[in-house]
Length: 124
Image 1 (cartoon, rainbow, N blue to C red):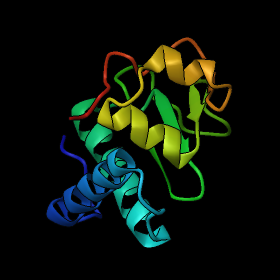
Image 2: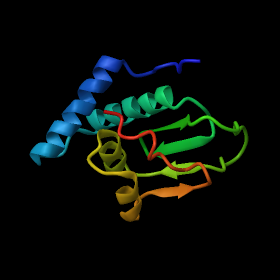
Image 3: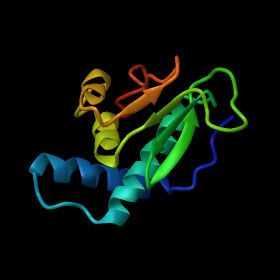
């Protein structure tokens, strides 16, 4: 079952490329709407590539998605949750940082047996 996209893939990819280019160049910060678009697009990409409902990935305040095949969660706090800031999420999605290095920053909260995205990332 394909996920229902809310972000236009062309616009999302453009925002993600803009984030990659900006971080590589070390130029000024991107506008919040561009970061939001890049985060939401990459979360949708993750959900489409790793379909399922056993892990919830949260990138506050921009978005959340469920992914990874396994037992479906329906009520309360999911048993497998990953929460991280947008900068770390986009670095993971782009391959600028690996899963273990992201965990080592102390900015990634990952709980549950399935809360590991190393097999799913990077997205590019």
